[in-house]
Image (cartoon, rainbow, N blue to C red; front, side, top):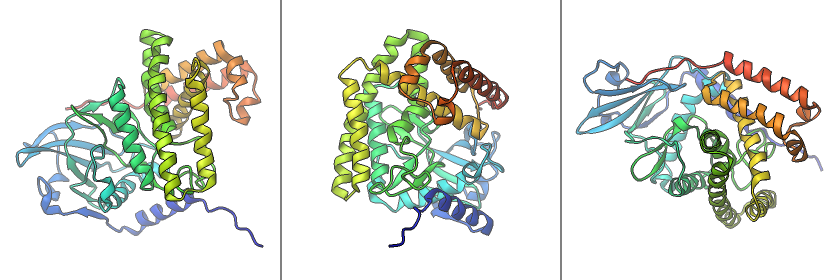
Length: 371
């Protein structure tokens, strides 16, 4: 019997999106008549416009304007002429967001709190209009906020959406709810057959919902806790997050089993849950060290690849260097490094991460202001 190589779903998605951009086709979601101002006017917004209350220009793909009209506030996202993130995924991120918003608008299961709804979007006009979220980035994670974010993440997964970028700028909290605001790196996949949307869907098992939340957001907060209040405070916060993650994954496993997931996917989830369950029964320090290394190293690599480094990137690089100097043997015992790095001795690894830190300094984004 002839066997065929697995399909690279990531390559196909990128090619389809590049083809779409090259074609010049538009994609529209919603009705322009529901916009707070005519789309042509929204395309010309600046800080001097009488309806503009705030301008947030720190986004890498778009600027966001807070517009007051019709007795309420709106978020108007306007695409930059060129995305500041290098690579295909950065250059197609605005298209990707409009595509995902079109798909999500058609799914009743995703008309829920926690996901920014779409009033209007147009690829050619470079506009996305949504209700304004009167919130701010999450700096300290509590139980309620963590449960809300995992609930939103599970709803997306089950509907076939994998979110890669739970970074602080994409996750907002208002007085009652945590919201996911940006869908530029939210990709389609089949949760019954795939782990995520990378490669073949099975080629990167290290990436999953909790890993993405931790790598892009939570471990940045845990690092601040370590620096300001010590390792014990960070470990207590990690225990809370991991307990909530375990509950969410046990629920996800049951839901996917009922949906007809493959044995490969279910066994993968079983393995993750078993590891967390064992660690939660003990001190958690080994798991913290392993997952902190994974999160900080992954986020550093992401920021270097996109050339989008920040002071947090440098703080993560400093943590990695300190961990190599203080915990090299424990890290080696847990096999945290890919093969190329595992072949290096301690001085070699320190030299490698010192070089990556220098690169991060060179790739730091300029500071921007919010008007």
